[in-house]
Length: 246
Image 1 (cartoon, rainbow, N blue to C red):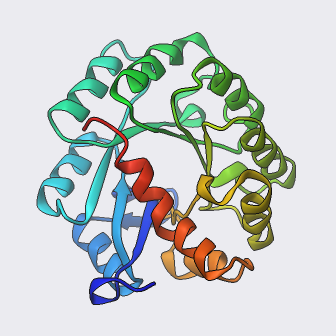
Image 2: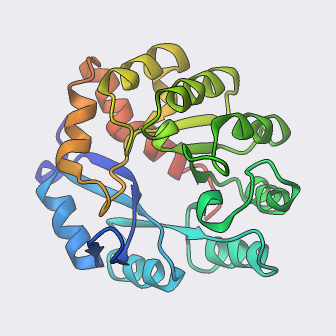
């Protein structure tokens, strides 16, 4: 399973910046070092401001893939998505209902989803914290936009009710993908693969809030076969990232 120079994993969830509340920080060079030390070939990056992501992708175009982080409450959010994909070469959108204070299935999100549909790019959401990012709202959104791939970051996070609900929602909606970072139960990764399907689970670290050393291990000890590990740790992400127009 190991590729060139031992790098074969794709990380679907990383951030750049300084986060004093969490006592963590990460710049582009440190991210590349982290990737090299943990066998990660490529990583999806989203940051605020978006210029952090843009500069990092320009510096490491063979290693980093940008997603644009937008707030649908802002008037320029749709045009920013279009610019990020068409001009910057970004591969998707990051939305964080918890931080920005909106429900995922609120009509304010629809223009972003419509643009994602036109551009054929995935949208990754933070999930797992009440009241703004609970799984049931993503089911409603998936029904309304069946042609947009919705990635549930953290697949419900740390609450078993939300983790189970995320798996249930993904099982019912073929356009929902589960991402593993921050979700503490290795056994739920195997359950997700068995119930939702091996093609709709992707690995993420949530760096610098999480670390690849334990996030990768969590996937590896979950009980998946070698082929399932290859899909979750690499191939599923590559397929998602190659489907857009950017």
